[in-house]
Image (cartoon, rainbow, N blue to C red; front, side):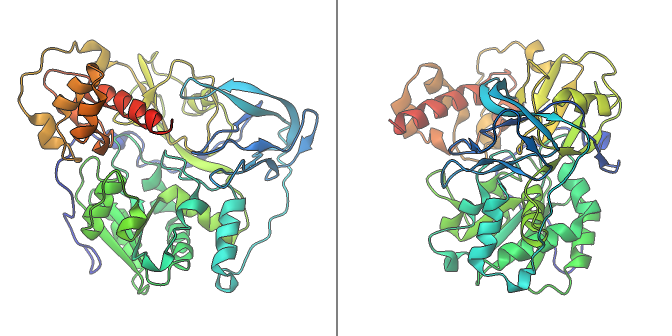
Length: 442
C-alpha cells in the first residue's frame, strides 16, 4: 500500500459471501448501440415523478430534455437516442410496478444536441449545483436520490468529508471496478468538483482492499492532491453501505434518524461522481451508465456502457445470451437486489446489474425453526437482533419492532445469509420497515 492507504478500516459485523466477481472483472467495458424502442419511466429517482415536456409525434435528438423535474426533490430526464415520441403510457419496470413512461422510436441515427463545456475553475458553487440539477444526476448506486439535493445541505461549512464510495461490496458487481481502472481521472475530477462546494472538506476515495490495482492507480493519480486521500477498507459485506462506509472511513457514527451531513459527511458512488464530472465539465446530461450483466447462466459476463432506456433483453443478447435457462434473474446483486419475473423492462438511472443464475438456491432451502444460535446478531452491522425483529414483524407488532430499534436495519441481508435455519429474516424486517415508514407519512 502507498502512503495514503490505511489497511483494514472496517465496521463491526458483516459477512464474506462468495463474491463471484471473477466472471466479469477482467473484461473491458463494452459499449452497446441500442436498437428498437427506448422506454423512459418518469420515476427513476426518489421524489416527485418527472413531468413530460414532449408529446406523441415529436422528433427528439440525443441529449434533448424530454421531462422536467416535478419538484425540488425530483430530476429531469433526457432522450438517449434520436427518434420520434411514439406514446406516453404506463410500462412495467424492474420492481414490477407500472410507471408512466415516454416511449421513443429509435431511428438509429443518434443525431445529438450540442453541449457546452464549462471551465470548472470559473464556476460559482450555485452554478455547479444548477448544472448537476439540470443534468438529471441522481444517486446511481441504487437509491436514486437527486444529487443536487444531497449536495445542498443546510450548513455546507460543516461538511468535513466527501467520500467517494468505491467499495463495491455487493457480490458479482464489477462496474465500479472497471470504471476506476478505465476512467480513473473522471472519478478524481468529479470528486474535485464536489469539493469545490465545501470549503472545509477533504476528499476520500474509499476502496476495498481486494482492489489493489485500483488503490495503486488512484494513489498514483492523487499523489499531488492535498485534499484527496485514498483509503483501503477491509473487504467485507456490506462495507459499501453508507453508515458502515462513513464509520470505516472517518470513525463517525450515524443512525437511521440522521443524514450523513449530520456527521459532516457527503457520500456519492463512483458512477454518480463521474456523472457529475460529465454534467459540470462537459455540459452533458445523464444519459448513460455501466451495467454488469453476469451470473453462471450468462455466456459472456461483462460490463456494458448502456444508454438509459434500453431493454434488459438487449443486454442479455449482447452478453451472448443464456448458457441455459436461468432459474432466477435478479436486478442488482444477490444480497440487496430483487428477483425479476419479466425481462421486458427498461434500464434506468439506477440499473446497476443483471444477475442470471442457473439455480435458485434460496427457493430450494426450506426455512426451519430458529435455534437461537445468535449468528444473525453477530453479523448485523446495525447492532440489532434480527431474530427478534422478524418475530415482531411476522406478528405485526409495530410498537415492539420500533422499540427494539427495527428502523436501524439497513436491509443488507447479512442475517438471512448467515442463518443456519434459512429463515427469511431480512424479508420480514424489510416489510415491517416499509409499514412503519408508510404510517409515519400519514
